[in-house]
Amino acid sequence: MCGTCNGDAAGAAPPAANSTTGNAAPSASTSNGVHPAQGKPASSPYQFVQDYISNVGRFKIIESTLREGEQFANAFFDLETKIKIAKALDNFGVDYIELTSPVASQASYDDCKAICQLGLKAKILTHVRCNMEDARKAVECGVDGVDLVIGTSSFLREYSHGKSMDMIKSIALEVIAYVKSKGIEVRFSSEDSFRSNLVDILHLYQACDKAGVDRVGVADTVGGATPRMVYDLIRTLRCCVGCDIETHFHDDTGCAVANAHSALEAGATHVDTSVLGIGERNGITPLGALMARMVVTAPDYVKSKYNLKALKSLETLVADAVQVNIPFNNPVTGFCAFTHKAGIHAKAILANPSTYEIIDPHDFGMTRYVSINSRITGWNAVKARIEQLGLGSEFSDDQVKEVTAKIKQMADIRPLAIDDTDSIIRSYHLDLQI
Ligand SMILES: CC(=O)SCCNC(=O)CCNC(=O)[C@H](O)C(C)(C)COP(=O)(O)OP(=O)(O)OC[C@H]1O[C@@H](n2cnc3c(N)ncnc32)[C@H](O)[C@@H]1OP(=O)(O)O
Ligand SMILES: O=C(O)CCC(=O)C(=O)O
Ligand SMILES: [Zn+2]
Image (cartoon, rainbow, N blue to C red; front, side, top):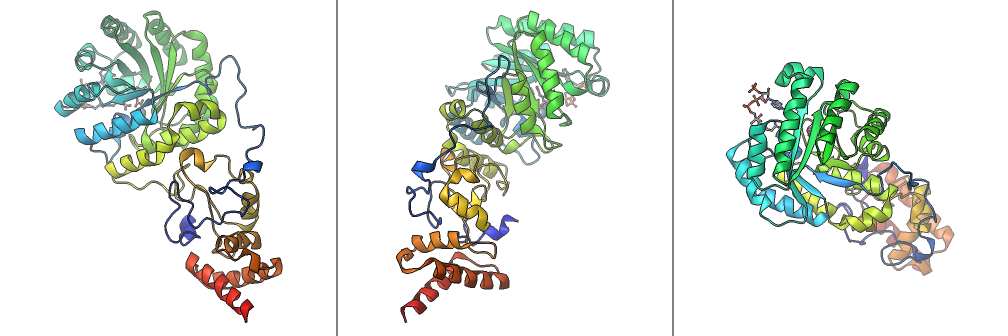
């Protein structure tokens, strides 16, 4: 458990963004601990190779913290909080911000109008049931686009709204025509797409495409899809419609990020996210985790388009608003996401960070951290700490190995903090003077 990382070289606190304090940095490194001469490998097997269908290098984000995220158990966003989150999302560079249906309540209606008037770069969408009354309310608010949704699986047709596929199609076409007549974007999505009849939904999407919808949406509403199922469905759909394809993945079985990646590979154009993945039940594709995935797949696109260094503050803002902690194992911003502990890892990391890091923490304004306070440390890591303490020239390699053995002896007895380890080093050093 990463609980043992507490009391690392930087003390009890987790490594902070833009801080190098206490890192066991190599002597030949830059101030941020990266060897300029030994950067990333020339090519990465994880980077995509462009094919004609994949959109991994040109996707768009529909950020739904203020819609799907409002469905998270702990969420209560007043207008002030919504505005802060909307501005932070805009600063991060998301393409769209999706808001709760204005039909939900008076505040939802008023807040939707207010956010539309902020003049953000991101386009503002609201998410409504596929019917004329909801669509009218949405348009009234001044949004840039309306996301229409209706369940198409037999479960939802029977137990949610009771409409046949024919009825769904005729309502969808009517509502799409109405929203288009208002000169704004319109998307049509089949809720619970993966449990819907494939032929039925392909026909429906084709009809919507013909009617001029801007995007059709595929939703894994219950989070049961696998990346292969997603690839197959999106690849098939890509051949049936010319419009954009939006995708929405719940994380009930832990596949939400992988499914989003797979969807883009198969030709989807848009991915729904929320900050920290908050949403109904255990939520959807988290924005930060998707960024972690995509910066590895398509580094140039992601680094040029999104303000990655703002991720930590964005996640902190939302975590505070919904009263949760950022999970310890969160990609990029989890407190031990760039902490290296085992001696074998530490040695290689100090020589070249690419050995054990697929993401450069500095791309996100984060720093790496090498722990030396455990029985599994090694002399190379301890040597780096000794150098950091300014004592490098006073220890031979044999002496570093001897002091490492002392650290391990003590670490076998109890957990150590950096002060303990530094004391062992300093007292060994004092003994050398006598
Ligand atoms: C998978 C998703 O996350 S979809 C998005 C979920 N978002 C929301 O639910 C938005 C917040 N919701 C709300 O505030 C409320 O549910 C409202 C205002 C939309 C509706 O509230 P109520 O009228 O009290 O109905 P209630 O919530 O009990 O039931 C949903 C109603 O919508 C109908 N409905 C459900 N989906 C659709 C749809 N896509 N299109 C049209 N009608 C629908 C249901 O049949 C039901 O109608 P009924 O009143 O005839 O039974
Ligand atoms: O509108 C959509 O595409 C998705 C709706 C939703 O939240 C879901 O199906 O889980
Ligand atoms: Zn959802």
